[in-house]
Amino acid sequence: MDKNALKERVNQVLAEEFELEQNELLPEARLYEDLGLDSLDAVDMVVAFEKAFAIHIGKNTELVSIKTLGELQAFIIKTATVQAV
Image 1 (cartoon, rainbow, N blue to C red):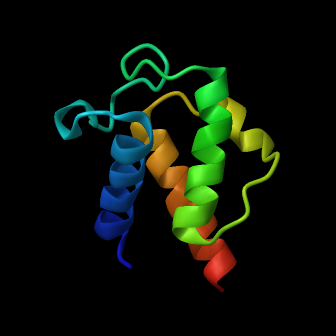
Image 2 (cartoon, rainbow, N blue to C red):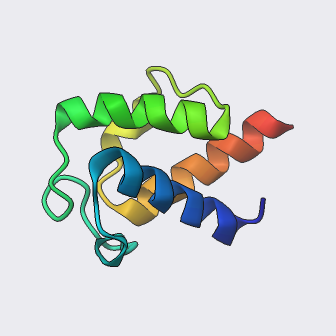
């Protein structure tokens, strides 16, 4: 998958898992303030991404610094790419 396809897949997972509208899923959207996610959703999000991308995220400390959808997309792309090697 190329980067754009991975970004679209991240958006698709979020839309399905958290009933978000596609027009809300902009790179600059803040996960908690703009998309309305909370700390419990963050746990569900990790599980959903691990399943969707066949990756292991676990307790990656980098996650706590992610604030926007664009940062989340970049993290998933990096993680999926590294683990695919």
